[in-house]
Length: 101
Image (tube, rainbow, N blue to C red; front, side, top):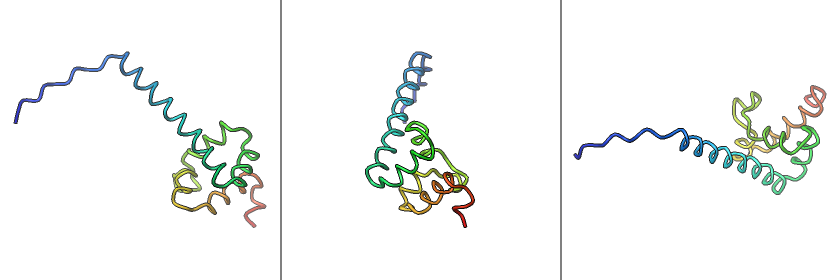
């Protein structure tokens, strides 16, 4: 087995560039998540936008871990096909305990 050469430490400039690239890719994916919801489940997306207020906040809610989903995101739930759980949570956010009755 050949001797493995130690990898040089990355520069702060390289790390900063990589972090910026990852941030930009994450932001783009978050936006695509809401776009996909609007295409696949328009009424749910519309209620979410009305309930949460604006596109950026709605998109972030869609990908943020939620206690109601045991630490998973609404996007995770949708990926598993559990649209009803997401509907329930959005309705609960909009109408509160009255919707749970």
